Image (tube, rainbow over all chains, first blue to last red; front, top):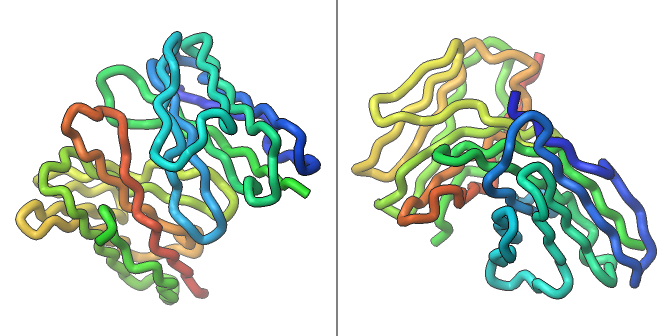
Length: 115
Length: 112
């Protein structure tokens, strides 16, 4: 149980285009979903926290107009990287939290390369 | 000072050896503690939660020292498959039930 999927698993796009990443909880309803970014040899950095049906809460330094998060249902959250630039190239990972628990279940990640 | 600090390693250890990692955290009010394992280019996977009384799961033992604000992970009889980066994770509490603070990880390399 507690499986989270992400799609796509990797994507290469040109600078200036937008990329949408989907995060789905397959066998449970996720009260909260999290979006992380990880650069090579660095720790996971939380970008934003989203609760179903409400606006995402962004961490300091993360541009909400550049990283659009939609959490329309208890099983789906999307992250759209708008006007991507090469410095946005990173490993993006989502996780889902279950109500009343500190534990988070991670998706397999999406590797984004912007050329 | 980082909120969660770990020795980045890498730790090069022969197969069968025992290895221990430490992690320190800055927020004394932190409520929950975890060790995650992350393989190269993969997502983190929960290895074990860390309880105040210490806990063991097979070859893995986790301990918490609240007074000194550190967490440890001990791996006995290490296997080649234990090679990975081990991430120390802390939940700071204070109403942010889900927020996790991640250490940068300690890289472990088990050699045959």
